[in-house]
Amino acid sequence: LSYGAMVDLIPDDPSCWIPFDRQMTNPPEAGGVPFNVENYERFFLESVVDDSITPVARANQMNAFEEGSEPSLEVTVDRIDANCASQKHSIQSKKILAESSEGQSYSHTQAWDILYQTVTLLKEAGNEALKSSQPTLAAQRYDKAVNYCSIAYLNFPVGNSLFLAEHQYVISKNSGFECRWNPLLKQLIMIRLNLSMCFLKEELKDTKEALSQANLALRALRPFTEKGVVLTGKKLSKKRKDEPHETFKEAKTLQAKAYFRLGSAQLAATDFEEAVNSFDKSAKCSKEVDLQVEDAVVRKLNEAKRRRKEKKEKERKKFKFMFSSQGDDDDGDLRL
Figure 1 (spheres, helix red, strand yellow):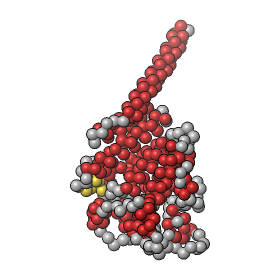
Figure 2: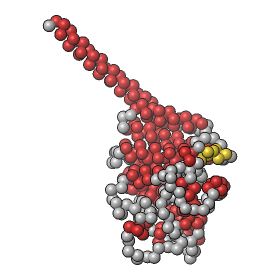
Figure 3: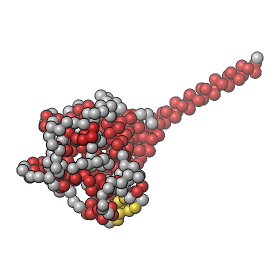
Figure 4: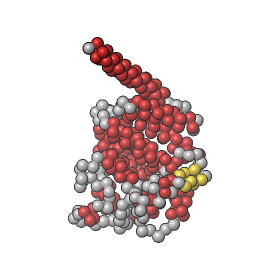
């Protein structure tokens, strides 16, 4: 696969790289220090220590924020939230990023750009593997991309990776949700949807994982599903107004895809009733932003309805036979 060797050289775990890179951590950890729990646990996604952690278990750690937890940062969340909402990501091309990083020290902007480009490279490599009919390899790369995305959204001691600190605080005040529509969040959602699709391939065939990834994508979209506003605060009870219409349109487009992936997983799990509901919601999301409902959604919806009808008919015949047999037994008793 093109550039496959390059992407597979990216460490599986962010903690194997980011704490030691002077462009991501200020100051970086000293190379060659003995690994121990005290120094090594600052990243929650360390799977070298515990190989039993599955992709879904790591994904579920996205909900790691607790109501009572509060990082010790002397800042005002409303001010930071407003500032974050107004900032534009300075996402650079790989070539520009590589040239600009030579000989430079740490900066918040560059650290975010490096993280984004890492995630993008992993996602593109996953897409390449999927196109080449290698869903297992694709799922591995998507899962690694989720690992790197997740350090932006988990609540954990960031150490000297200062670019995460302020962002982490704002998320903790929004019930663990990212409430700024940005390229990294969009990549995370798309990666989850691709991963959900991988889990429905014959080589993997894991409907539970497929359902989980689709639901996590839908969860990430929750703050952006009302026109003109973004839901923020504890339990997403506040509304930040004057959000561009483009945010709503992009979010609804992804929500339509997420419901399609959810419906596909439910269909594979023979939960036809829920599959019909999900495909209906997918079509509704597309219509809300004046987009044509995709043919694949219509086909899957019709299939789910047909199989639901077949299932009900089969159950009706089964119950009819049961009651008929019971009636024959009762007649026999009377004859005796």
